[in-house]
Image (cartoon, rainbow, N blue to C red; front, side, top):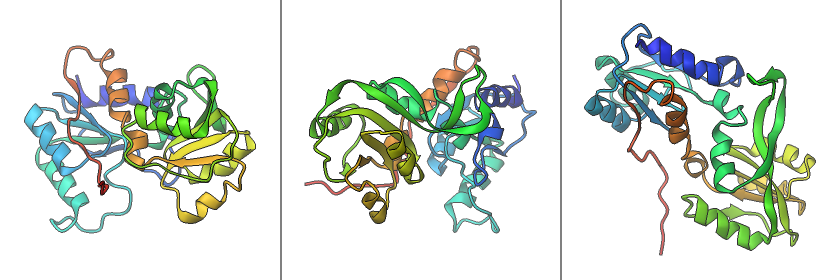
Amino acid sequence: MQISKIISALEDWAPLAWQEPYDNAGLIVGNPDLNCTGVLCSLDCTEAVVEEAISKGCNLIVSHHPIVFKGVKQFNSNDYVSRVLVKAIQNNIALYAIHTNLDSLLDGVNKTLADRLRLENRKILTPKPGFKDQNGGAIGSGLIGELPLETDEAEFLKWIKEKLPVSVIKHTAFTKKPLKTIALCGGSGSFLIADAKARNADCFITSDLKYHDFFEADGQILLVDIGHWESEHGVAPLIVAYLKPKFPTFAVLESLVNTQPVSYLKD
């Protein structure tokens, strides 16, 4: 089975045409004509993930985040991106990223959050004009859905901590209204705050909100920042669940490396 066959399956699921203009999804390093010896799926592609692939005999790493996001001008040991690329090339390991194109799918990245929070009646928060999925449904940014029952704001934050691997939650002041309609965006979603408000969401869950972003709530919506890794930690198993039934005769593995780069000081 050639690596190109796995890539074709991934791009049937989340075509590269769906990625944002700034993105770098797709095959970053490697020869697609090589026979695939195994696939390792991860959120990030780090040196430890490449070493794990080597130890497990996998010559294809499928990560959500592209290891190359900006231009690389030098390949040396002073930079972690270069070290990953050199180690992958030296060991004939292909690196593939499935990033904002997978974010755009209703059953993509945001599904992993919506499932855990048991959201119903799900739709794309901000559809991308002129694009449809394989079933004719909308694709785009974020997701909006409803809780089974109206929920108190404080209780909902406790629910988030129960259902997600969240150590710290940053949020705006409570609106003192029950929550029913929830918008969310795995990863950095500040660009969707206005859209969440326009769709009358009671709460918007995302990550990487800056200080001034929180002012945009303006008492109309509860903004919740759960952390970037925390909002996307379910992506690797999502990719595994997609690929395994399609390629049952060889290893499709979830990485055991915790790539969370942020640590929290706790009491």
